[in-house]
Amino acid sequence: MNSFKPFYISAFTILVLSSCGTQKQAFNFSKFTPITAPHNVTKKAALKDMDLKRWSHLDIQKDTVPGMSVDRTYAELIKNKIGEKVIVGIIDSGGDIEHEDLKSVIWTNVKEIPGNGIDDDKNGFIDDIHGWNFLGDIVKEHLEYERIVNDKNLTDQATYLAAKAENDKELTEATKKKEQYDEMIAVLNEANSTIETILKKEKYTLDDVKAITTTDEKVEKAKANMQRFFSFGMPIKDLKEALQGEIDKANTTLSGDNLKKDYRKVVGDNPNDITDTKYGNNNVMGPDKKETLHGTHVAGIVGQVRHNNKGGDGVANNVAIMTIRAVPDGDEYDKDIALAIRYAVDNGAKVINGSFGKAFSPQKQWVFDAIKYAASKDVLIVHAAGNSSKNIDFFDNFPNDSEDKKTEISDNLITVGALNVEYGNKIVARFSNIGKINVDVFAPGVQIYATVPDNSYKFLQGTSMASPNVAGVAALIRSYYPKLTASQVKEIILNSGVSIDANVIVGGNPNDIRPFSDLSKTGKIVNAYNAFLMANKISKK
Image (cartoon, rainbow, N blue to C red; front, side, top):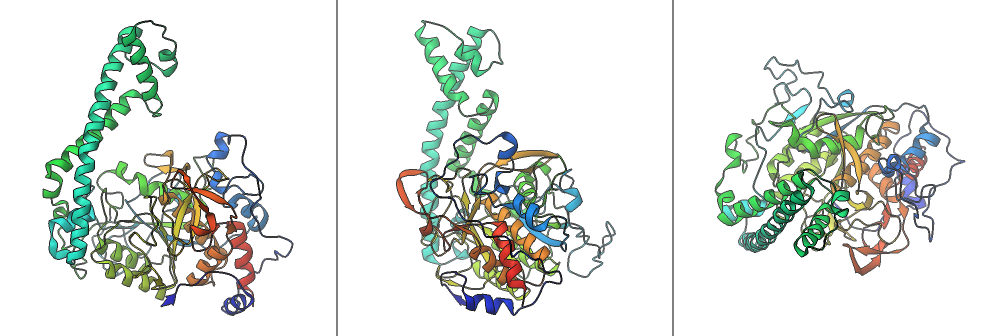
């Protein structure tokens, strides 16, 4: 058990870490110097489309965006060298393992004979060729506080009352949202009808609307409203569907129908019994491939094929993506996450990414035990800090690596906050959680371009995207320096980051200005180039 202390590199630290083994092929990086953040520099010009699609790989010195210097690492340090293959477990919503930019990097369990209905490798999972689906045919699920409200016996009285308060708050919010979206869709329908009549067509563009000249007050109002609706950045038809979807969700919440559903029933296990492990199936894409959007995107950030003229590029160039489906549309069960971690560990993963989280965790001890089990098997876990604009030194965000928010249970978990593409006082993503104790580092998490189902690609944002960026760097280090331990790789990633010595906007609130150094344990942003230099140094005796 490790008490919290600031992470810094010292002569003593290097001496201790250096004694743990040497990489077979030592690289001479003595002529290279670590990257530091330029001062008083902001990116004036907008990034070109191609650069935006890979900004997380760019360099903070050369490109003045807070990227991780991945391209520079390959160009100057890795060049044509080949590392060892690293299995990366992606615990998520599943993944499109047939995607054109992922199928060549999907992990295959060579000890299992496909389709014979036999557990050939005796690991407890039948025909687990590319991973395991702990959700079966589940897509949607309750939020954890809803499950607690439904069953007081899940947790203690204090947690139950907190969950009930959260549920009551959600009911109040649902009422407000319903009123807001009802009004918006009514205004949209009226304005759309007016504009269609004026233009004499159902499909029209923003430029068509702007070109309308009128003195009619009703038309002028409709014109102004439609310009506002176009600012949402989606076709009007899609906006209508999105608004109606929000109204439907609010109606479901207010009716209480959602609480009455037993989503888990189709799986057939007892989610509150950690010993009940014979459930799920080997279909890691789940019942609907489109629902794997999140997991497919996360997998792509780590390992989509580099420089193949398809979509974006992954951080790591020699990985096998193990797909573990355990995160539904709703909150994940602690049991599924604990067993998913153990599955990844037992089947060879050296890095695990977890881009999920929740505010309540009735069986958090199961997950703590799984994290410690991963540590005992030398497996590094990278986890998203969360998207609630909160300080998780004070607010719960599970899973984590501390039972009291102060003392780590192990030294193999990295918690990652999200960076904006803009280098300057807006460098922190407005949604990102922060925490001087419980967030370790920050990494790119806004406008991240990666794979989504059906051979498509998309920009997404969230600490969910920042986490796999760091997992990719971890996989890169473990590939070229396989004798470094999980704990060492964590220390390297944290200590080698680029310090940002500036005051920044927090939570998107221009009145909330704080030193970047106060937002995480290290006050740094992840940098693959520096990490590679430090890994090389530490790997030598």
